[in-house]
Image (cartoon, rainbow, N blue to C red; front, side, top):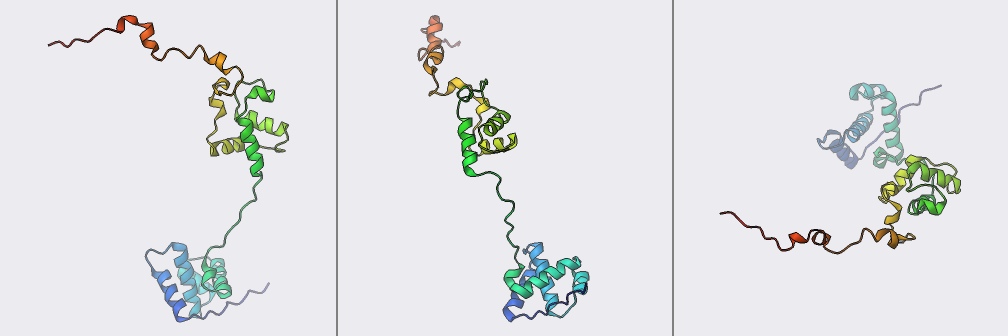
Length: 193
């Protein structure tokens, strides 16, 4: 396979000025500095191999940045955006799992007092919300909204059936410590002196 010949680089005065500032600036990030040095060496007519030796970079790196500058000029020295992997789940699926986490397990027919992430993942798959979802994904979704259904008892929710009946023993007079200890009501502390 034939080796591609080096692209000829010619710089304008303003390009040369900016590249020198980038190549020798103390606050310039390392990658930008090295890219600018590659282009400056290429503008002097040096080969890929010679530039690689002088900068200490790999030959492929020199070839890449010299080619990008030849194609796109100064904007070619910037990093290209990498879109990354497409999301596996839709926002609607995440919202449905979050809504499920806010329901009582008994409403879903689960014999649980509270939800755990593995149980929520199993229930989401059983309901057809997602064909496959892991407990760690469910935990990440719940963390986004600070939902922690495994830390709450189901009767804490005021909208739950029978809340008032279960909460009645807990609710007492406003000052229950005075009711339990009537001797403390009139007691005054005396200072010794």
